[in-house]
Image: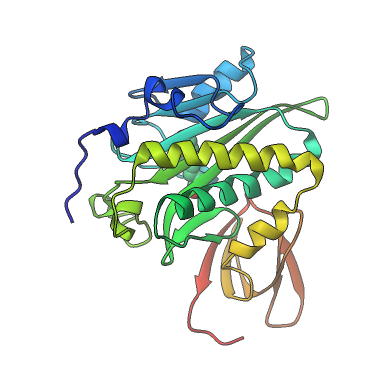
Length: 273
Ligand code: BTN
């Protein structure tokens, strides 16, 4: 497969190209666009602290210090990905559901713009054919028991060629690799903003985001290994819960509930419960 990193119209995610077709009414009304920055998370946090409106998005063609969960790096050669941070100021009770909103929005945006069928690996990795195509990072500033700001970061491999990165090449993929048809970075970003806005705005009405998230979850019922601090735990995934946690049944029958953000998870394939 050839990886054409040239920028056609369908790849143009600069504000003039996005604004004219934006279907979301609140997310993306204010767009900060950078050809290259350290991380959209850092810039979003700075502008949010300076008072940027909820719904402001920061997008970049390239990050020189993109970050993932648990202190990992997020790799993205220029023009290969969607690199997005969304500034939100939700009620504190909604925080546990934001990862669900983001991952369901990513899955639906891929489904609606391609022939692909993504799944979610707990807590919020988006996989196609068991390989990671998108990841979500949420960072909160909480003051006096209230959310000052939440930044939802989404990285999506659209044209990334994982073979360029030996560290991730066996676990990562991109939409271009998986899809029979060409995926437009612009179209998928527009769809993602629309899906995200709809799901986020439905949260206070108690819409069943948990059920939607669970419906795409491929981790339930699997045998997994988790790295939890210095410990390795393994067992059968008995439940994935409305607060976003995961309950593991160990081989001695005991239960362990894990919260996202603390663990690295490996799914053991080929074992029978
Ligand atoms: C993960 O799966 O570990 C989360 C990856 C999140 C990556 C995105 S890319 C846009 C935003 N800016 C960052 O530095 N990270 C997030």
